[in-house]
Image 1 (cartoon, helix red, strand yellow):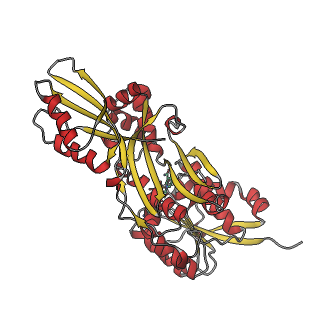
Image 2: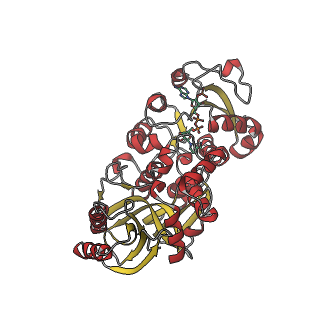
Image 3: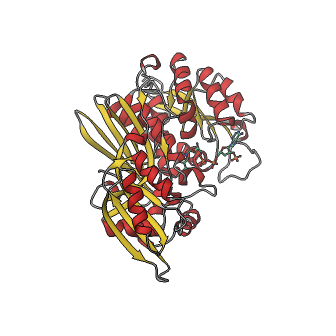
Length: 432
Ligand SMILES: NC(=O)c1ccc[n+]([C@@H]2O[C@H](COP(=O)([O-])OP(=O)(O)OC[C@H]3O[C@@H](n4cnc5c(N)ncnc54)[C@H](OP(=O)(O)O)[C@@H]3O)[C@@H](O)[C@H]2O)c1
């Protein structure tokens, strides 16, 4: 019988994800051998602090002091980068690994979103793999679906919930009727939000994932410039309650679509009809919806983050390489990827939800409606709720469809009024 080939793997970064992956690979080695017909061998590991107490023992022989030495080790076949961050050590490691003809697996969305095009080109030139399933939506196999399962399709739209932390917070605010800061605290106590959750809350994490999905869906280069990004940090309990009364749920969506050869990518919290599929994706779950021809609509849902789900994706990438499947990082050759025109959100039309909390005095409502009319924004529905103190009232408006530019202009002008209690809120209503 032919002897099984041994494949040497190095793991750099032994935090949340790296330490889980390390233990998983050791525990499930036999399964691997059966499924891939190769022997996965962890030959080297590295992290920042050798003296740090870890949940498991690392044989001295495997520990590499300078992680960059791993990229020059002739015996290493696959390097798994689990440091994180778009610059610094993770960047140095992946560039050096690919230049030294090592296969790379990473969960680093920030780095792939920023340098994916350059890295993909180096990987292709050096005939090695660069795999990043774990970088987008954790355990949801969206990258492989786009590269393989859905390869026959011309994709027109890809959208969904790509951030488990923000979805967990929005779900908690809704179910427990609590404010954003209280929901964030609870998410942090449960380990769903990092101590610095900035990129989860300001939409940047979703933006990185969306840029990668856009490039894969439309065979274009990653576009970091033309993307409109808003996070959930401006959603209040009052907005969630109002949305419920109007028949909607508030969700943070990443949306990318192509129309007339122009791509629009955007990340924003929005109101979605309660009856829609996506409005019912709750907690830390992620969901991706793809519209393509000839397949129609495809939906993939699953755990978006955490060591278990992320390891599932990392192992899928490692297995592909173990089996000898070298795929181009962005499906098609770098030479054939297109420069596509990306359009601005300004001309896109939306119906919108506005909440304007004002001092309850004569002439306010008339000023609001006149300002809207001047900006070509018309009212579909208006509800005025007095505050208990009667000094203020909350005016909730659902608009007819209007250009995004005009909706923003309206909010900008209204934000300057002296009768405001707080800055007006504006969320788009999705046509889903
Ligand atoms: N956490 C999740 O749920 C999740 C989900 C999907 C994707 N990801 C991605 O997975 C990656 C890792 O995330 P994580 O949560 O595991 O991060 P983490 O817990 O902060 O771990 C980072 C690891 O990198 C090591 N490190 C930092 N600086 C280094 C350096 N200069 N040289 C060598 N090693 C260095 C750290 O070493 P020490 O241990 O010595 O400090 C630590 O082991 C990130 O790209 C993240 O975006 C995470």
